[in-house]
Image (cartoon, rainbow, N blue to C red):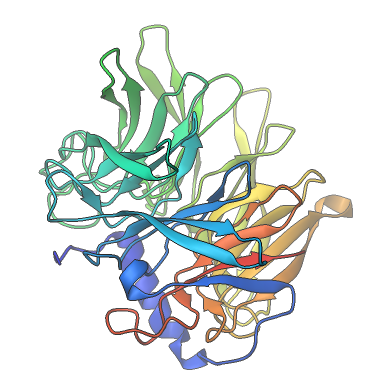
Length: 436
């Protein structure tokens, strides 16, 4: 299996794992949580991606490792008549097959009935790919590689993609772009600062890529985006970068189409490690509320004793500026989790849901609910603290709802899937359900 350099995100995650290893324990899971699947090496391990559900509440996701070539899979979990769940590998990624991608950490999305996702590596130039999963008439799925990155147009597609109403795809790459081949930015030498890209289907059944924005180290721009992008109602794109900005701790940005066909960037907020602000935005996408405010998470910073991450809100003004408010600071020693990661989601009542990678009652991560209260405050409820074996541990990609309001997600470690290989100590990960 190929040996690849670590992303800044992966290096940060590794250091955090070292910190919390001393708290590893074997407490039982709470009654509101159910493990639906325990991953094993042969069929996929280390599910860094979140999950997506179709209209029949089948669950889909990717694994970074495991499978036939040990470089990841695309999987489906389907509810069975007996009350259990059936696990099916839809695709085994391979570094031995020409142009296939491998190492997928992004949550796939549905677009016109097909699944779309990204891989960190592989493709024609070994700089990462965007792939499509198409269901056949017999119920099986075929993978089609729709784009290979080539460094100068992006490298290392870590984030989930987004589709517009016309079926065009949008996303980010952590590295690559116009700065590819230079030592200008964070991470590995000559890797570049990252891009925002568009993929547009053409008349011949192919896809054409366009770089909408090249990030650059000019003192104010962001560097190395690890989260995806989202649209507002006017067609503007919003996202975050892990580094860069005024203080080099990441930014929130807006990209707006102009009459010339180009896209203009506006920096809405530069994160600052001083004071109570958060920094290092999470791998998830931002989310809008019904009033046009943006919400997201940072993996570090905040207020209190040993803060470890925040949930923030950005509120637009009539003058075009945005005001940031920290609505929750997580604490290393707190029972409600630490290091919030992945995307946040709203329910119909305006409550926010997400996951923390660490912390909680057993220091292996949580699923949480944030509810607006009087005076602009938000109250937090710990819906589940992960307890490692036989429960999952270290959820990194948020949660999603099914049709009746249950929450689903994945944990990168934990479960009962003991096996040889790189997940033998922490086990291979789980897919879980939480009933609030």
